[in-house]
Image (cartoon, rainbow, N blue to C red):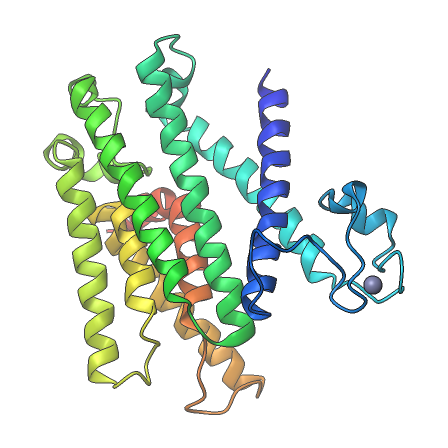
Length: 300
Ligand SMILES: [Zn+2]
């Protein structure tokens, strides 16, 4: 059963990865997402059904268009594979959270909805952040409509989630804490009693912090879209993990900037896209944030 669900989640990730490729590509070429059929960018050959299967079509076609033999970028299968793996690891990570496993297999519909919704909300956020990051890496630009989709979808998930938490009174059971590991260990009941407030504060603090950096550095420190990305992540993480996320992201940004300077890939004052760094920081916070915080406090 566990293997079957894991496999299903992996395949879902492959398909979402394939869709992410389509979105990024079509935004770059200014094509419609829904109206135009998938086609070869060089000869216009419309992709047949089997040529749309993520990952495997690339292997069958040996990386070339079936008609004009134009090379297909290796980036596409990599994005698909990474998304598949990310989805599967996320599912495993959720399974290690007490509330998720208990509710998912509880047999009670509302509890199962709460568990599944929490996971789906995370997948949507992950996908939007992936689109933003890939686009930012390739074009040094963050699209407003990506941010809008991210903000609205995350808000909806957080509101429904908090409503269910309130309705099912799961806070009293002590099982539920604000999405991520670690929080309950240090703030325990005091903080996790107000998850919705924590979500909102996460948004406000990260947004204001990054917005003030943009304002002070007049956009040279980071781009105008970055405060919104951080805000959306903060909304999902809640207050405590948002602070952990910020520390990790700035450390990461410093290391990457230094590395690029040392290896002379970038000159001083050149722009480094901060969107992908925030995404990476978010992944590290989600997968290892709890462990990192525990390690830090045990050192004190
Ligand atoms: Zn072609």
